[in-house]
Image (cartoon, rainbow, N blue to C red; front, side):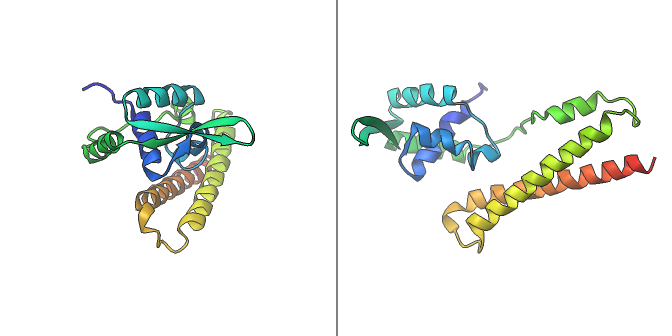
Length: 181
């Protein structure tokens, strides 16, 4: 089966929540969506044009200030139909993650390699900071877990926190194990 353009469905999903400009969509990858998916500005704008050509989204022009025109995009009925169909499809394959640290670690041959401790410590600090960020997001967005309209987002944050806890604990255990040798 051919690889499907998942960015298409991310954009449709974002537009199913509310109308957005291209800039707003790009900014979503700096916050919530960026926790689990990345996209570049250079990918988003051409795709917005294709989605509009395919009649999955439409836009209206708004004026900001005195002259600045902005396109505000919204999902069409056909776009909502495709999004809902995609959400309902099975997801049978696990995706490989691209983790440069893990790739580098694969090529460390000995437990006394002088590069190992700094690598592990750097990653521990990064993952601790990521964990703090995720916990703050959870508290800010779901402090009482009462937002039933964003349950999927709640589950994603919950999963990310558990993942970062596991990663952090593994790094701590690994660093302690190296010190005891």
